[in-house]
Length: 231
Image 1 (tube, one colour):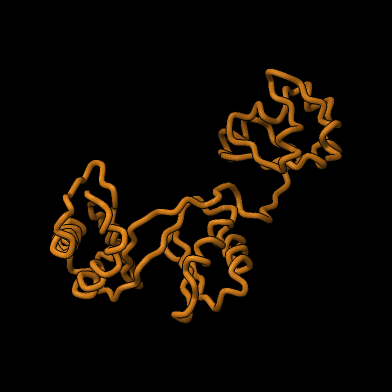
Image 2 (cartoon, one colour):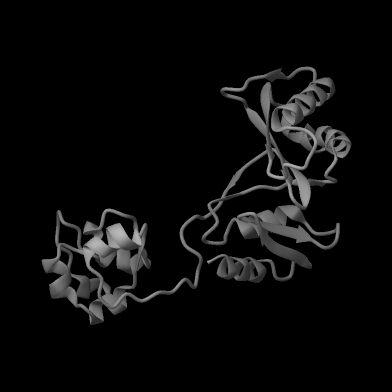
């Protein structure tokens, strides 16, 4: 859940300073409360949090085109100075903003070309994509997407007592299974798992501890789970 993910982010950022962390419009925002926070350390810590697929550093702007035009060249310079091509993508979730997305992109792109005349626009395969987001509560500029650990947040819990495959696929539409080796060893047990062809017969991703992934038998070969469950 998002609450658990925020809790894990707060835990990983301990000792780096004070932060305001909130979720809005399906995005988690991590905002340092002072300018002396080392953002490189922050990004390194956030990159270690399971459950985050990608994240980005961003420049915060006032929700005016003038402020975005002023800050975009300054913020994007280090990303663009060694690049040859770029494009600007704009997302305007606040429809009250007086400029539409294509207009924002055109004006930001023109400003960046003035600052970095060596650049060329390539909308299909740019080296750098500058993204401008105008949200209900602010505007943001970002230039790079950083890959996170992915997976599920640490501490995610759930129990399924008895569910038919049809219910999992059609009614619940489960996308991932979390397996705990020890619990599966206790119930339903190795024999039933082998007879069923192993937990990995499920077509969706199956996740668990390293021991669980080694122990669960696959359809092509049977692995004695009891050998691995004590590791």
